[in-house]
Image (cartoon, rainbow, N blue to C red; front, side):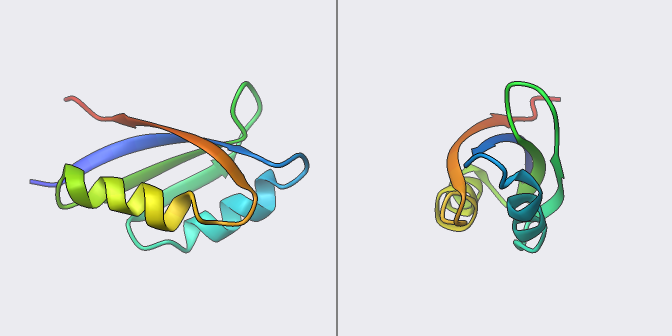
Length: 77
C-alpha cells in the first residue's frame, strides 16, 4: 500500500509558477499548482512508504531552487 500526501510549499517571491512547473516534473508528484493564500504551491505526492515519501520531500522537492519551506500532511483515510 502506498502513502499519499499533500505538500504545502512556500517559495521565493514571484517564483511560485516556475517552481510548481519544476515540481510537476519530480517522479512521485502527481499534481503541483501555484495557489493563493498562506502557501504558494499545493502538491500531491505518492510513495511506497513513509520513508520513501520523506526522501522524496527532502531530496527532490526541498532541493528545487526557489523552495523556501514545505509542510507535508500525510493522507489518513
